[in-house]
Amino acid sequence: MEFFIDTADINDIRELAATGLVDGVTTNPSLIAKSGRQFIEVIKEITEIVSGPISAEVTSLEYDGMMAEGRKLAALADNIVVKLPLTPDGLKACKTFTSEGIATNVTLCFSAAQALLAAKAGATYISPFIGRLDDLGQDGLGLIADIVEIYSAYPELSTKVLVASVRSPLHVVEAAKMGADTATVPPSVLRAMFKHPLTDKGLDAFMADWAKTGQSIL
Image (cartoon, rainbow, N blue to C red; front, side, top):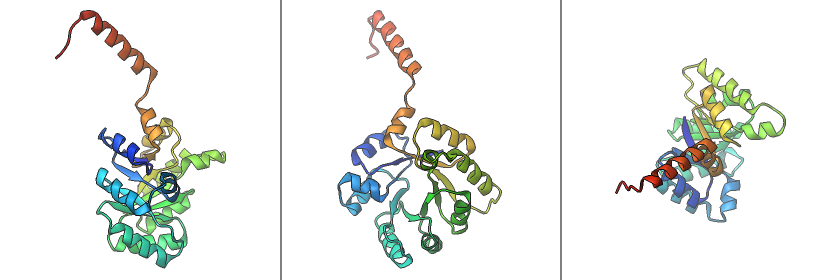
């Protein structure tokens, strides 16, 4: 499974990318606004830190505007993925970008039917928002299972399932068990994935026993 981080915070991206575990980055207008910085400036800086796919989202809601914005974003770096809303205009733009060899991430997916349309439009990634479905009492992970099953039935569909709106490490583990290709997680969730109380307890015991020996490896 690929791990993307869902943030526009450059400090978080630098720190987590240094682990070698970050395959890509996803951003959206809300994350850019939270950064307080200029959109293009932030995207350029991210592409210099992470060599994998970097999702940059258009803000136009109309096809022509999406095409103009998407082409400008794609020209920033070879690893830009143009992020598009799951709307008729967004899917139309997705189809055109795909024909031009520009990678796309179709976002705000909340149903298997939408995911099927995005795959038909040639999306590189589909982003189902599982946490937001859970918030409404619906089964976010169930949607992942449905999309993976549908895509698996049609080998000619190359769209990757990018699990979004992830709230916990359990979301990541369960999605991985279902065969999702990618998970994009907030920095806090990726950090939480490192943690387990028994790991901390065991390491403390090892270090205490080592200190008693009075030895040093160096």
